[in-house]
Image 1 (cartoon, rainbow, N blue to C red):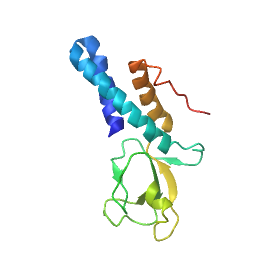
Image 2: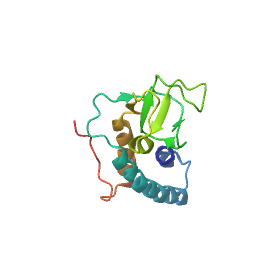
Image 3: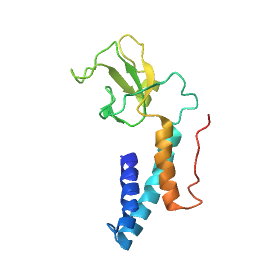
Image 4: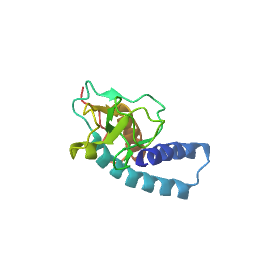
Length: 147
């Protein structure tokens, strides 16, 4: 949700130049953006994978997904087995676990789960950096991914 709020705020603040947002609305949006960016930085730290080689990326436009064990919404990282069907949905062709459930030892029946991410991390970093640039504060430096 934080990711979507930040994207929406970036678009809204950019609309200030088009006179679609008042000055007081801009100030409120910038304050909210600052709060959301602080939270998003924490999320990115927990979701960052230093060695993403070999981790499959979900197809663009894939609908939101949730853990088949605990029901938690999955933002970025998860584990998937395409051999075991989801017990929650007949429409879901895979069994999906959030990282927390997987690290607690939960798995599918065949135990051949593979790590997967929802989108390239650089895409998340791009949105984060756009927000940091709008805020223009040294509290939010621009990050670049290590290659």
